[in-house]
Amino acid sequence: MMQDLVVHAVYIGYALGMLLTFGTILTWVERKQAAVMSDRIGANRAYIRLPYTQIKLVWIGLFHGIADGLKMMLKEDFRPDSYDKFAYAIAPWVVFAPVLLVFAVIPFGGSLHPAELFSGLPAVAAWFGERSYQLQIARLDAGLLIIFAFGGLTVIGAMLAGWSSSNKFSMLGALRAGSQMISYELVMGLTVLGLVLIYGTVDLTAIVDHQSGTLFGFLPAWGVFLQPFAAVLFVTAAMAENRRIPFDLPEAESELIAGYFTEYSAMKMGLFMFAEFIEIAVIAAIFSTLFLGGYNLPYMNDRGFALPGGTVIALSHGTVVVLQLVTFLAKVLFMSSFQILVRWSLPRFRYDQLLRFAWKFLFPICLANLVVTAVAVWALGGFQ
Image (cartoon, rainbow, N blue to C red; front, side):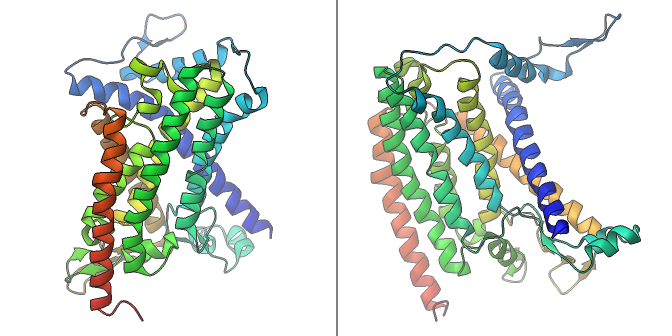
């Protein structure tokens, strides 16, 4: 129906706009947050001067990201004498596209009832009728599995880039990326299995709904309280998946120049870099959905707030929708900032340390957490 097409087109536009904005803003956040942590001023030189005046708009360095984007687009695109030109050309898109696709199954709000939202516009309300929509591009029962399916595709792009560049540094970076992402993908999968056992579903919307309740009558039933070890393990493995310091061995500048994208320049290299910053926001969105109650505040649901003690605060549909959207964005920004904080706090691993950390430390802890969770769920009658 036309109504469904319009709503989902708006959803897609919102998701693309949000991710691209986060990818741009996080380049500035990384500079300024690193500067604050190092007791420096940070990016503050780029500006736009108002015509016919001496007024310079610095805006605390926000124009540096715009300058970087323009530089990437205007640079000459040098191409090596690659072994496989097609693989070389498609590799940046194989890395970039799955990062956007993952967000398609992440719910960024609750239920949307257009007729209720546009009650002041009778014609619009009548056009939508009784239809309701989840604030999610694709409501799939296997949403969590889709995340891992799409997320695992990025390693193919890294391998293609390194193999097709005819550069030993690039190939070594690609091999590092492949082994690293396989190792930490396993850790990520095991961490979320505990939540799957507890909630009994891989539907992300259902997982968020489960987190709208309470534990012990007062504690929000967020995944971080039910699975604290899994939350720490998940964010650690996710940062390793994104190849961020201290896990940036596939692109360690002091060892491999720029790793698997050494031979890339201009906007092709920009796609690799932009995908990395967008993935910061996507990881934050997944973590917020699984462990921080998703788009809801504590004790919040699609009708308002159900506080401990039985107090119910009803809110209008429009207020709930706006609150959920803002709450989700705030959680994503918080977790993105946390990842950047870690990036500027810890030194880089050696490669043998990186793999040992995954297989000899994180993997056994994940298995132990999963076993304890399975026994606890069985003992409490969770299995039928």
